[in-house]
Length: 166
Image (cartoon, helix red, strand yellow):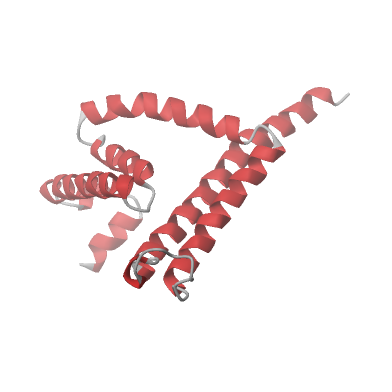
């Protein structure tokens, strides 16, 4: 069994039986779609999970690959736009940090304040389960912002410097 995992980790997927690979792709892809749909109404990165599910399913289905083309195009446009100016970069970073802070606050669950009109039961309900999804969402946002910054902002400034050198 160890040999199989070494083959998988080294990128040799031919060591995985085809039926297991197909089943794994199906289960993982549809699970990510289900998590994404749930996260659209619950705290969490719903759109990201939906896109990840489509990426996995695109390994087996042409329809999933066709759905990814406009999503990828639009995502790259938005990512490039979001790192165009420093105020946008700072706002994106602060948004990720606020999500992480909210997740920690949600998990710690401080006492219900006096101004809260509903019962104690409804104050930050969900505890660390909801808090951890907010923390993960914030970390994903920061990671994507860092990726966008490195891909679009740094390459643009380095190519601009090369063009302007004598």
